[in-house]
Length: 123
Image (cartoon, rainbow, N blue to C red; front, side):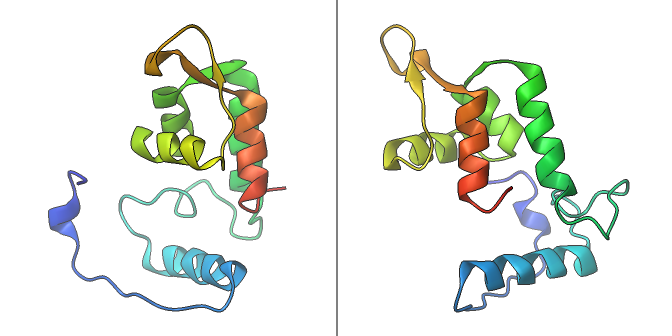
Protein backbone atom coordinates (compact mmCIF):
# COMPACT_ATOMS: atom_id res chain seq x y z
CA UNK A 1 0.00 0.00 0.00
CA UNK A 2 3.01 2.33 0.24
CA UNK A 3 3.65 4.92 -2.44
CA UNK A 4 7.07 3.38 -2.94
CA UNK A 5 5.93 -0.26 -3.29
CA UNK A 6 6.72 -0.23 -7.00
CA UNK A 7 10.38 0.40 -6.11
CA UNK A 8 10.78 -2.92 -4.28
CA UNK A 9 13.34 -5.04 -6.14
CA UNK A 10 13.09 -8.19 -4.01
CA UNK A 11 11.78 -9.55 -0.74
CA UNK A 12 13.54 -12.19 1.33
CA UNK A 13 11.65 -14.05 4.05
CA UNK A 14 13.73 -15.75 6.76
CA UNK A 15 12.73 -17.77 9.82
CA UNK A 16 14.34 -17.16 13.21
CA UNK A 17 13.88 -19.08 16.44
CA UNK A 18 13.45 -15.97 18.59
CA UNK A 19 12.21 -12.42 18.18
CA UNK A 20 15.61 -11.18 19.35
CA UNK A 21 17.39 -13.07 16.53
CA UNK A 22 14.91 -11.68 13.99
CA UNK A 23 15.38 -8.11 15.22
CA UNK A 24 19.18 -8.44 15.19
CA UNK A 25 19.09 -9.78 11.61
CA UNK A 26 16.74 -6.97 10.54
CA UNK A 27 18.98 -4.29 12.07
CA UNK A 28 22.05 -5.83 10.40
CA UNK A 29 20.26 -5.96 7.02
CA UNK A 30 19.07 -2.36 7.31
CA UNK A 31 22.56 -1.16 8.22
CA UNK A 32 24.23 -3.06 5.38
CA UNK A 33 21.58 -2.58 2.66
CA UNK A 34 20.60 0.99 3.63
CA UNK A 35 17.03 0.87 2.30
CA UNK A 36 15.83 4.25 1.07
CA UNK A 37 12.61 4.40 3.11
CA UNK A 38 13.63 2.68 6.35
CA UNK A 39 15.00 5.30 8.73
CA UNK A 40 15.02 3.44 12.05
CA UNK A 41 18.58 2.10 11.71
CA UNK A 42 19.52 3.93 8.53
CA UNK A 43 20.08 7.54 9.56
CA UNK A 44 23.14 9.49 8.47
CA UNK A 45 23.46 11.04 11.95
CA UNK A 46 23.14 7.70 13.77
CA UNK A 47 26.22 6.40 15.54
CA UNK A 48 26.72 2.73 14.62
CA UNK A 49 28.17 1.94 18.03
CA UNK A 50 24.98 2.95 19.87
CA UNK A 51 22.08 0.57 19.08
CA UNK A 52 19.88 2.04 21.84
CA UNK A 53 20.17 5.55 20.40
CA UNK A 54 16.97 5.27 18.30
CA UNK A 55 14.90 4.09 21.26
CA UNK A 56 16.20 6.86 23.51
CA UNK A 57 15.50 9.50 20.85
CA UNK A 58 12.00 8.15 20.31
CA UNK A 59 11.19 8.19 24.03
CA UNK A 60 12.50 11.75 24.37
CA UNK A 61 10.26 12.84 21.45
CA UNK A 62 7.23 11.24 23.07
CA UNK A 63 7.76 12.77 26.49
CA UNK A 64 8.70 16.23 25.22
CA UNK A 65 5.91 16.67 22.69
CA UNK A 66 2.62 16.16 24.52
CA UNK A 67 0.90 14.13 27.23
CA UNK A 68 -1.68 12.54 24.85
CA UNK A 69 -1.78 11.69 21.15
CA UNK A 70 -4.51 10.92 18.65
CA UNK A 71 -4.19 7.58 16.88
CA UNK A 72 -2.81 9.35 13.80
CA UNK A 73 -0.25 11.30 15.86
CA UNK A 74 0.87 8.13 17.65
CA UNK A 75 1.25 6.41 14.28
CA UNK A 76 3.48 9.24 13.06
CA UNK A 77 5.65 9.06 16.19
CA UNK A 78 6.06 5.29 15.80
CA UNK A 79 6.41 5.51 12.00
CA UNK A 80 3.57 3.03 11.39
CA UNK A 81 0.08 3.31 9.91
CA UNK A 82 -2.88 4.46 12.00
CA UNK A 83 -4.44 1.06 11.21
CA UNK A 84 -1.47 -0.59 12.90
CA UNK A 85 -1.95 1.56 16.00
CA UNK A 86 -5.69 0.74 16.06
CA UNK A 87 -4.81 -2.97 15.79
CA UNK A 88 -2.31 -2.69 18.66
CA UNK A 89 -4.96 -1.01 20.81
CA UNK A 90 -7.64 -3.56 19.88
CA UNK A 91 -5.31 -6.48 20.66
CA UNK A 92 -4.34 -4.96 24.02
CA UNK A 93 -0.69 -4.53 23.05
CA UNK A 94 -0.95 -0.74 23.38
CA UNK A 95 -2.91 1.13 26.01
CA UNK A 96 -5.30 3.97 25.24
CA UNK A 97 -7.81 6.27 26.88
CA UNK A 98 -11.14 7.53 25.58
CA UNK A 99 -11.99 11.21 25.82
CA UNK A 100 -15.65 11.58 24.89
CA UNK A 101 -17.51 9.23 22.55
CA UNK A 102 -16.62 7.69 19.21
CA UNK A 103 -13.48 6.41 17.50
CA UNK A 104 -11.98 9.90 17.21
CA UNK A 105 -11.99 10.23 20.99
CA UNK A 106 -9.28 7.58 21.44
CA UNK A 107 -5.99 8.94 22.75
CA UNK A 108 -2.69 7.33 23.63
CA UNK A 109 -0.75 8.91 26.47
CA UNK A 110 2.98 9.46 26.22
CA UNK A 111 3.46 6.91 29.00
CA UNK A 112 1.38 4.36 27.09
CA UNK A 113 3.62 4.86 24.06
CA UNK A 114 6.70 4.37 26.26
CA UNK A 115 5.16 1.21 27.75
CA UNK A 116 4.54 -0.11 24.24
CA UNK A 117 8.11 0.64 23.13
CA UNK A 118 9.48 -1.07 26.22
CA UNK A 119 7.24 -4.10 25.58
CA UNK A 120 8.78 -4.60 22.13
CA UNK A 121 12.34 -4.44 23.38
CA UNK A 122 13.17 -0.83 24.19
CA UNK A 123 14.77 0.03 27.54
